[in-house]
Image (tube, rainbow, N blue to C red):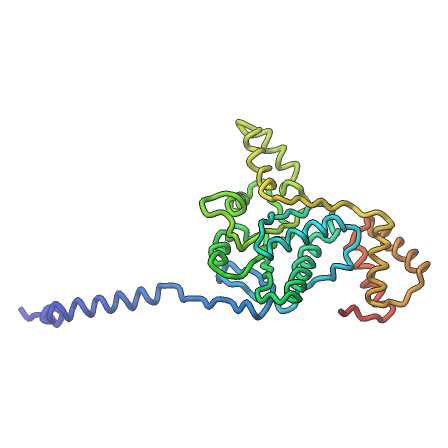
Length: 300
């Protein structure tokens, strides 16, 4: 019976060919290395968990700190906390919670910009980096922390409009990163979040947990303890009429919109009445309408 080519080949040659094919197959299956982002290209990034990448944001959508009215105490506390973190001193994670449209996310972005501007004046070469993580990507937060941990830069990880539904368990990933787990939060990372809810979950959700659990107190305590991971709780409340008008007047003065004081007051209050609320967001929407009617460009 004739021998096959494989059978007649030397054992060493056969083993070498098999090993080469195995190595080639493994190389194809192995994930390709991803280049580290160029942190000098931008001061802000968006986390994209699908590709494990930090996408640079060349121009951040933000307003100047001077235009944020009616939140002086929250502004001072958050800026001071951010400054301490930037200098390598102990600082707290911050939860900005409360009324809609009162400048919570605007304050985070303005604080980042303000502290960076101060660092540059002092000649610092490594400004703070702002990294936004979307609410639906919270489960990938541990992966993001792993990427940041060995880096020399300091990062503010920011999640806007953070909250959890009844069947959502991703809050456990956030708890472990903020104050739990073996590794915990890296020294070069701080976490800022905004939410309309003080405890990051609806009252109905908490009541449902209390009514269905074998030990209601322990179940609710586990979920409420998430907000305890934030050392700073900054509450934002609905603004008064005077504060609303101060916001409008601040925008008008900054962008030099031609409008008399009496007409501005009357139209601003009418706008707020039709919207059924007064807030920084409503004030900005009024300014956009007013600028369009007067032919004013809203540019820095």
